Image (spheres, helix red, strand yellow):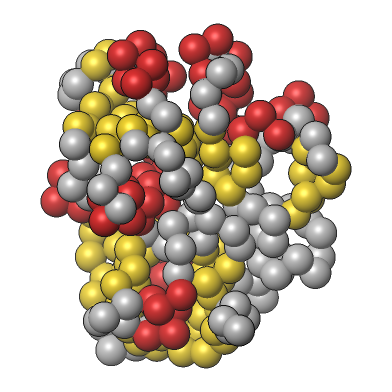
Length: 262
């Protein structure tokens, strides 16, 4: 029987580099997590001795042969600010992989990945995995400005990449919810990650109602392992915990009108 228990231990920092304003990439040596990680799963990182709670971070890359994982992190608080200052050679207290990730249907050939802001983090891993399965991947990424789009050097290789910016500095003027009809019509499955307003806009868009769509919810977590119930949401099939039952859910199963701001 496969060992599905998460690893609790140490990961060594191989590199820490800026990616775009307010975002950095940690590359870690952690054979145990790299061997088991699936797209959409996350890790919990201890951020020094002064902060009690660990921080949940999506896994954006995992390479089992090398034992390395990559984390794309937005510097938005005390915990992530502490992480941004770590140096190669230092070690991090880590738990993972955690949660349930994306599921690619066996019969799905054309995949549409939609990411808003930092949504590229888990979608990067998903796109790489989909390519190894021979799927056709279209990636739609959006940000307020071109400066806030993930640089191409950190993006996965896909069949087509569409950029949307609100100021029209790069690609289509608008948001990812302005995704061209042709990409939606061609998709056998849709996978999304981004802020709650993006999800709500997608769910109100008639073009997405008949499409199987999975979403990765980004919420505040305390334990990350299903003990505290702090990340509970309401779904068509009852109460679910984002950390243990998710963070990936079928979009049409979530009761969006009862979901508080994340």
